[in-house]
Image (cartoon, rainbow, N blue to C red; front, side, top):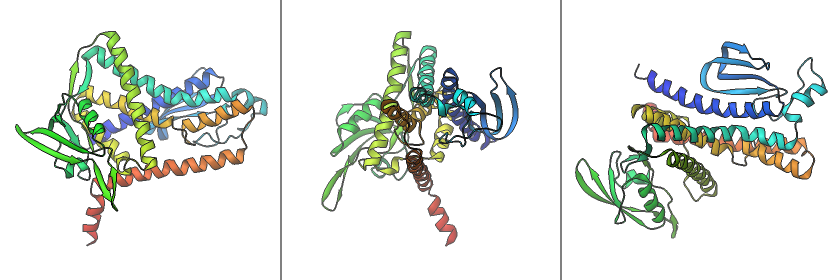
Length: 370
């Protein structure tokens, strides 16, 4: 039972954000005359299915780890290539297939998923703010792993950071501001640990071959939250602001990792998401719902990146075809989608590798071998 609960919360978190994403695609596709053959909650063998009035088969499948929408004419799960199903004609394809729609329509269909995630997050943040107050992270921290600069410098999970560089830190946002302003310099933290005050000094740079390289992050996240009562208008403003800031920060972080200005060790994988979902569920229902909204923002933001295979890549391709007034060569499109697939799979493998390092899997494996 102790293991079942974390697995269940992980399945719920991943299932909700992916289903919301796919629903976004389905809604916009239908609005543009695309026939959606099936919508599945989960993967694998179908446990239950039913067709609606528009002919879409709604399925509940065995593995509750997300879901998918199958649009008419899709030859594969990536929606890159099309095929004419048996019994249908070219006229049917022109009328019902997303591949045959105008570039601006395909662009909107691609945007549907990421926008659904972002709108969903805004709605969740707003609902929580109105019902229980706006959630604000306090000044207690969780150290992400023992491999981080924070841990190596002496910070531990549960530490309360009372000031940074002599400036009082009342919440985690204050801490982040001081970490950012200290990049390439020294960060001095005053902390309270089990009612004892300590001071920790962190060098936000490293020397390599005589060169000084600035360090962008120290490897901490928030641990606790306070709830602040707000008006409906404040709730609307803060929910939009929170979603926007989170989305842009994640996109910037990926760009920094790609350019080498941020360590690739910051990339997390499926184990990180599992741990996050479990920890947030233990903190309470409100914390878990908030985490679902946060992961939804991240999924929406990542999918807006202009990488082939991701929705952002499809948006760029459709946009170019819209501007030039003709389709790009299929060979070129297939080539860049293969490149995009390599990038995405590479990031996934990097995330899994970092996860395994953080849980000391390789050290355990080495001890077993010896």
